[in-house]
Amino acid sequence: MNKMIKVDFNSDLGESFGNYKIGLDSEILHQVTSANVACGFHAGDASIMAQTVQLALDKGVAIGAHPGFPDLQGFGRRKIEMNTSDITDIVAYQVGALSAFTPDHKLHHVKAHGALYNMAAKDRLIADAVITGIKLVDPQTIVYGLANSELIKAAQNANMKFAQEVFADRNYQSDGSLVPRSQPNAVISNPAEAAQRALEMVEKKSVVSVTGEVVPLAVDSICVHGDNHSAVDLAIEIKKLLLENQVTVTNKIC
Image (cartoon, rainbow, N blue to C red; front, side):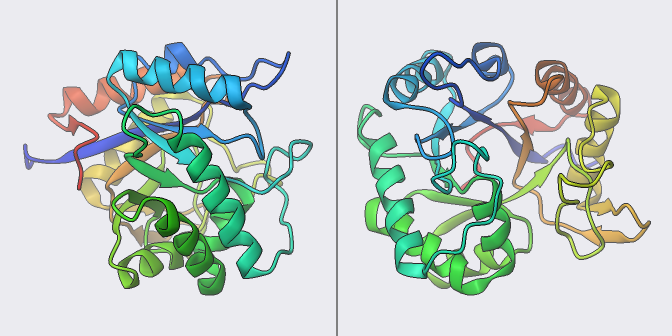
């Protein structure tokens, strides 16, 4: 096997707000190399943003913004019809807010959340709106997007750095999109299965869809969701298997 394979390992964090604690951020941060920090619209609040940034800094984890739709009740996973200028504005607002908490007011990356992420993956107009919002605040940052998606194409077109992302804890459809969470087989919660899936995606640059097709994928970063009940076990198992197979796990991907 090629010993020079390297990949980033990211998780969605900072999703608590007010009196509500969601996720096991400090435990996850021991495993990942990049953190996608909620910016108050779908989850998180100002204090949680500040705390999560500090936790990531303490552990040497790269910090990215995780902007989503303004939808606390739906955790940002519900589609919201919004014109493209409004999408640009909510993205810029959230990216700017998180940047305020980092030491140099810069971010390693930006990754859209939930429904906004999935809509931008398929709809070029939404993808362009997201990219415009990011570029307004930090044109040097890395755009994380679903591998082979419209968001990646939009980032390329805007001459922005990008990282093609895959999901260890999600099943895929034959078109390379994720199985919707409304379906029973959407999420992989078995740590060994998720780890094997991650390793195969990195080594083979492809994934087997739920209907059996082999879907080619570029792999720059692997995501494990922080709100998954078994998130910590998944993260430990994934990182362990990657390292055992001489995959370098690093946030220095661009």
